[in-house]
Length: 353
Ligand SMILES: NC(=O)c1ccc[n+]([C@@H]2O[C@H](COP(=O)([O-])OP(=O)(O)OC[C@H]3O[C@@H](n4cnc5c(N)ncnc54)[C@H](O)[C@@H]3O)[C@@H](O)[C@H]2O)c1
Ligand SMILES: [Zn+2]
Image (tube, rainbow, N blue to C red; front, side, top):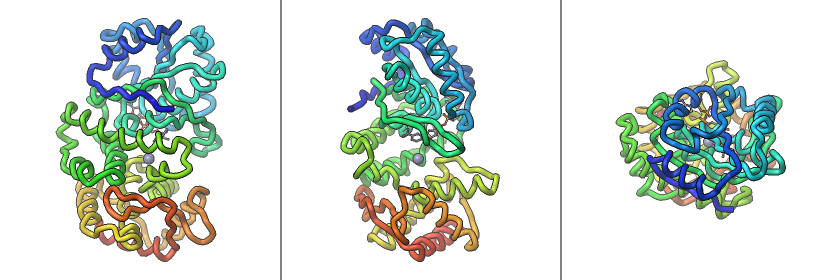
């Protein structure tokens, strides 16, 4: 069930070696139109595999992570003569690896696929761990399957064309992985200068970081236990993300996660003895690099209602959380009352003001 992970800034060479070993009947590369422009021309020059492959291009963005696009992909796979002896390469952000992974796992009952993430969020989160799928009826990831890529090739070379906001969005997930892994790694992440875009150093950090997710997923692939640790920051984060959407001024997932992480660490401090100085340290970092997501006390009820809507979080009159007793010390299946959550909102707003 384990996926092979390759960390390299020589993607073309590694990919060609890998594909030569697999010897597929033919190869299809799935990209969105942004990745087609930013990445494919160079990859076609450098990689024999990509030069020979059929390139399937879909429209970019979360709005196109749909069953309609999935149908288009299946259609293109048929046109390209894909069989179970073929190989699909998903090259793109989380939308492409989620949707391409699902397309591959369902086409002719499953064909092999490789993920090559081209966003930071894709590299440290979406492309690893076997969750694939598409949105349906306006709800996220409603149709999907657990399906592992044969291999994930993780590289920072693609990030040169990535806007800063996309980098920061992915970095929030890295900080979350740092918080659930170790003080050393968490420190490293807060000290690293992301804006300097030192891609080699970034690759080293990603290697340690992806391993955090990968180890947790290997221990609990279908999320019955410890995989819930990866949900840290997301119970509150999803509610922030949805509130922003309702206000018609969406914030990206990673930004919602970093604000959610800060709020949940405040909750961890109040309920599980998480150190106050670590909350302050993260708050200073968030203020400097992510700014502030703000809301009024009159919106607390809506935020709590949004958390309840996510059925994963609901038990009677309390809401489920993953909390930390310290950096790297995770407690899953904890609960908090509405009053405790309101208290954490108060502190969050105060600490970032
Ligand atoms: N399966 C999982 O475990 C998991 C985990 C986290 C997130 N996700 C999913 O991941 C998705 C979000 O991923 P994302 O943020 O990568 O979104 P995305 O795939 O939409 O990529 C973000 C934007 O960057 C563009 N892009 C991609 N690579 C580029 C490059 N190298 N240069 C320039 N532009 C580039 C894309 O075209 C897109 O416009 C969501 O659908 C989410 O549900 C899945
Ligand atoms: Zn996330």
